[in-house]
Length: 198
Image (cartoon, rainbow, N blue to C red):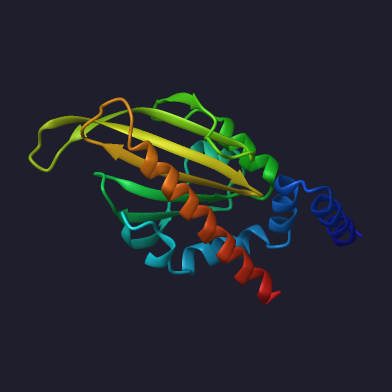
């Protein structure tokens, strides 16, 4: 009965042209644990990246405490070679869209401030900017600006992170937006492969 209602809801959403709800319904057909495993084990092709990025390395990411409080199934990090000191795409897979949205709404633990919603997205989103302090390779104290652009697609929070050595208040916003688009395309490809297996 639940599956029949989900199919009906998906059909109604597509007919009504509500793309956001249709995306959420399509994600519901892939089990969160199956989707997490697929994201962790599927290579991220350079062809999925804009020309500024390459050499994507997919790895396990230890979930944050606030993600655990929202019942995260698991997190995946994709590190990239790019124009910034740090460029990455993160996936946090949750049991439900509600849990993913609750995690997105929570302020980052390392500070930063909410700039607003991610431009160009009608799905739940947040754009953060801030400063991180640390030591460089020479042991000198440095401050880098960071930007995090995150959206929720179904039960998955997708975030793109960039840092900047030139601007202590923000990362590379255009690069973060390009990585987010790439991250969503990759998620769609992985979801489609998982659905074909079922």
